[in-house]
Length: 487
Image (cartoon, rainbow, N blue to C red; front, side, top):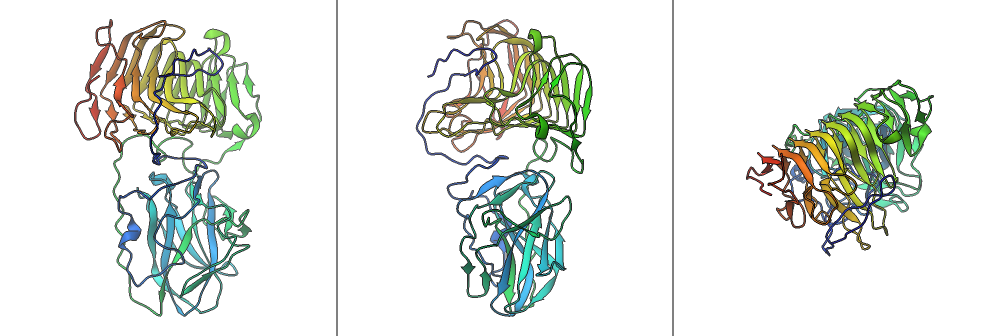
């Protein structure tokens, strides 16, 4: 076990057990993370596709796929049939299980950009190839060029293989040209993808084609998904919000409200709060740091996306912070609290862990402090164990490194599994090798995801919770399968 000595205000690290294990992809909203290994075993809509319908690509997981997100956009490809037939619908590869990774619509276009057919796509869970059909089949003529595309939802999540169209692809029925294929357009609504993708990128959008056929396919049945926990559909900037450019300072020295703006494009690594009474709402922001004067700053942030990028501190960090319905990615940690923090209804995931580094990540962490409420969040430390011992410590880490831990409520959260690099999903603050211990720490009615090894972390769900410490309480915590979780 590592025993690092963290320093306040630099790069706090945390203990994590070293382990060599196969890496498994954890389903979450990953940004530009390479996908490896077989597709999940859960059935996808495409598995119910009629055998008479063909596409340009096979049913297996595409190679070299990365997941990107950003502005809403149309993505697709050019193709031409080798025989006459009908376009029945569209296939698309869904790389993330979240419903927000489902495209909004699928469209078939003529070469000149005329819409030939379009269908809306209901959000579905699961990963892999998915199929949708048009309300009416469209006759396609041998040798004629067409374009097929999908439009992403507001978070812009889509799969792509850079260089995937370096060479053309051909089947007995369809021809997909290489070089200058892969087409896209940034737009808030479905539009013809008129711009060539950089580097011949393949977005893995495919036509459903019936050579010479006019019979109908059965409608696919979407895979149901459990609801209720914060995720891409109910955190971050609300769908439909148009963000204006941010014109204010990147270091805030007077109370103000920041609403409906893109701060990230201007302020880079962080928006620094050096005053009391700052409010951020419905905005795209970098890291938000309220660390002025050891408690002389405060910020309330809601309905916003925090994109902390590659900083070696936290996405949200400091004193006197209230955060609600926030989607936080990047940073060594998602949320680091010193004192007086309230985190509710938010989604913490996809922390920064560079290849070749030995960063230890956490979703929520305190290295000493008091008065914290963490209620009804999805807490997911997602980085996998790498070859240089980088990876996750926990979803929730309470460590008495600089001060005692006191008055912390962890209630009704979903602690997600990481069977690769998390030793335990929660560290409860017991003194152990730390200078300080924990009192008045309450873990109440939380749900721990079992994951592939059925333990949440590599070794179990929780460690270092001291039942006998003053005011500590462990009550109503369960596995996602319903059994009680005990420390």
